[in-house]
Length: 547
Ligand code: AMP
Image (cartoon, rainbow, N blue to C red; front, side):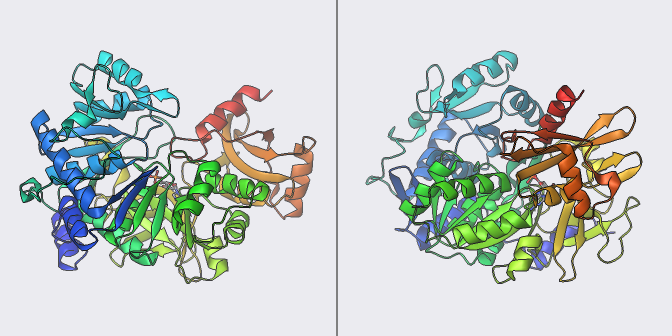
């Protein structure tokens, strides 16, 4: 059996892991792409050289404040230049940021502080009408270990981010840094490429997120590999729409992949079409990443207002949850660009379609693992490999998949096999072309009177109904059936009822036991903090309304 040490040696020997940390990578990119624009945030445009300079100044400020290698800091910022500067300052220092999402609130943050033992908290003053200083006050009241709160903006009683820059001019839109002397002393060579660079949060739909330790080297490997797969280069302009603290826009290839080729990252403040589409036009964006729900909203918006010039767009990545093939086709037609389906887990493995795959493949599967080092298996309940093209749980081991969650030994025993495979909880099979197709989550499987139903199968069929715009199916606890099937639909037709829907599904050849027991019309989806449909909330709604 391969131990973790053997696996790590293998990843180094095979060249997947390079001996460099993310902080030093920024210095390298800054010398190669020096005068190129690295980040656009509103009216602010900053070159690679200026970015590196700002990062070095902030390193000094953080050191003065007493932060040091190994410290953990909860970082909760919207998509912004500040996020980039702070993250890279920490990468250079070996301080470990915990990538909280702007949508996280007290419940999640309390758990994050407790599990990580972080004592520093970095926030924006206000964002989209929400005051994060109030949140910080509440958290501090309950957790006396939080001793430093740093605010980007009006600091009130907390520490102003701008005071931490060495010459006290940390104004994010100040791009003239004449007095800067290149200072290698900021680069901490003791930061090993295998060290934890940051902690991502697991995308669970409820409860307290788990902390996912990502190393400098594995993250760089994914970002560079995906940048290559997406054919990115110095002319690439990446629009960061999804919360940047999430794995997808952070490094798949996202922000870090864009930097690795000298491209430009444009920050989008709100994940809404009236911000996304004008930015694509103004900044000549070439690529972005969306979740299916957001892609659908953009499609609707484009149908109403299609006078945006979005001809610069070459590629849209869509991932995070199941994209039905009808929407996939619509995305390619309406945006007039290539689509890349991405199956990704913050724990590691990324599968995606290739730019030169056929339309049929792109619209119907999630492609292949991005690395030859990915050992992906599809297994049954006993952990045995299933036969070709059979559905089973996808488990994985590889150069950028974690070997354990942070500080969670009991969870790790459940989520990892003895020989280091991470059990994704996702059900998948391999198509004839060798592509992976995700068909649902093991947990999500509905067990109706002993019969098993995969929600995505029903969802795909329902979305083919001409009156149904989108559908989401959940299993609801039921005293007689064990679980009943509840289909939530978005429709303009108020008369559409359960009998008509069943008739339609029967015409599609669906087994009787898979017919929905309950249909609920909903105006819009309750979403999780990363924009996925919140199925837990749907289950609560279905229970409340069911008579
Ligand atoms: P996260 O850890 O937040 O990135 O969420 C990972 C989970 O999202 C996976 O385990 C899947 O259940 C789901 N997921 C991600 N990408 C896809 C996709 N393209 N299709 C279906 N499910 C996906």
